[in-house]
Length: 112
Image 1 (cartoon, rainbow, N blue to C red):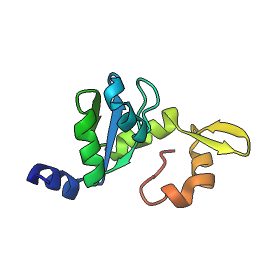
Image 2: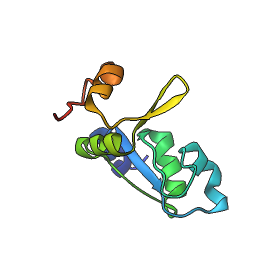
Image 3: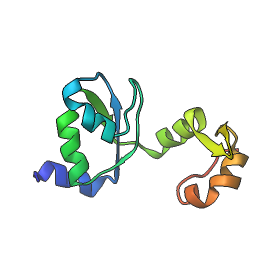
C-alpha cells in the first residue's frame, strides 16, 4: 500500500464515491459500492479493499471525503427511513431525534 493511501486512511474514516459514468468492465465493483444508477452515491468506510476498488473505478466515478455539514445537508435533503411499510423523508429534526437519535447522536446536532 502506498504512503499516500496510508495517509488518507489515517486522516479520514469515510469516503463518498458517486457515479460519473458507467463502463461494463467495472460494473461489478460499481455494484459492490452500491452505485446502482447514475448520479447516485454511498458512504464507504476507508480500508485497503475499498481503496483498491476505488482505483479500479477511478476513471468512472468522482469521490471525495464528506464533512459534517455535507452529511447533515444530505440527510435533510435526501434522507429517508422505513417506518413499517412506509418510506418517510427525514426532513424534520424532531423525527430524526426521536427515531435515529441513538445512532446519529454522536455527531448530529440538529439546528432549530
